[in-house]
Amino acid sequence: QVQLVESGGGLVQARGSLRLSCAASGRTFSTYTMAWFRQAPGKERDFVAAVSLISSRTYYADSVKGRFTISRDNAKNTVYLQMNSLEPEDTAVYYCAAKTGAVAGTVGSLYNYWGQGTQVTVAS
Image (tube, rainbow, N blue to C red):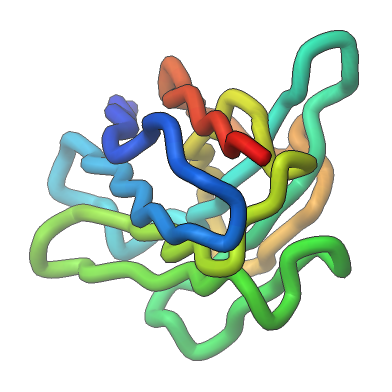
């Protein structure tokens, strides 16, 4: 079992930056592939980024490549999402997710654990 708690969301102007954090409970954080998803009002939940067990590989949705960076600190049981050059289209609730095993996935159903989400609002 792992519990995930996101933080760092808020209101930002377009072209601004935010860093989201996701703190995980438990002693086996390093055995989970971690990811961020987001869900805008009236839309389905979409994959944003994922990072493998030891940060050796990262994966991004095309819409955020070059603007967002996912990273993890296994010593702190935390995964981060640095978001730069934010656009109004990035407005959504952002969710942290974890799955067992080393293979990252872009489909939400592959992930076993989810946080409650943190709201990100980008004003134009």
